[in-house]
Length: 274
Image 1 (cartoon, rainbow, N blue to C red):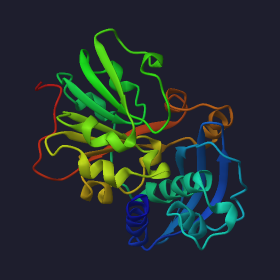
Image 2 (cartoon, one colour):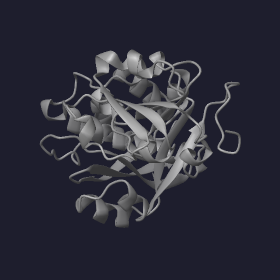
Image 3 (cartoon, rainbow, N blue to C red):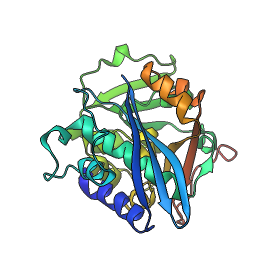
């Protein structure tokens, strides 16, 4: 139920009383960058946000106001036909990330560093490659909507990898100690379901540039950590996006990893206490 979570994140932005204007939309082969100006009180704050670029025809979103792009993010039927689909939805999410950034209370750093490496069972929704490298000998269960062969995934020899279709997600997550859900589920759907079926005893992390908006609705739905990004150098990031860069290439060119933790009693694994 993608729409309800995205709508709740948009609601968090609206509660700030801010208004925003779209400045630029950059569609690259792998990522989308949206630049905007956020007006709050007496301040006008330039800001930017990223999202995963799904497959699909490019569109010229620069002619639309922020409010219309946010409607595309939730899949509203009231938007023009060209704003229906995965690409405009991703543009809407990048817009939401851009206008949310000035209001976020996040910690700079990689949340992976605080997770215990002593885990035996990990579930990932989407092909989250750091899960194969960070945790040593373990069983990684990948829930993937596309057809991917397990033997095509590079991983250390002491890591076992098994693949599951989305309808077998509950089986894949059974007794997992860590669950990673990629932010692209905000585009393709299913995030709320995945959070609801993750084991209560697992640490559940929503991760990726697409999940860089207000985290509170994701915490309410079951996430323990939300890990996104902040764009510090839009000009340089714009260049890398157009060149097809993503992931590490963006982090080396003006994109900063950030994260927030849910405020509840549930313990979060710590690498200093395996």
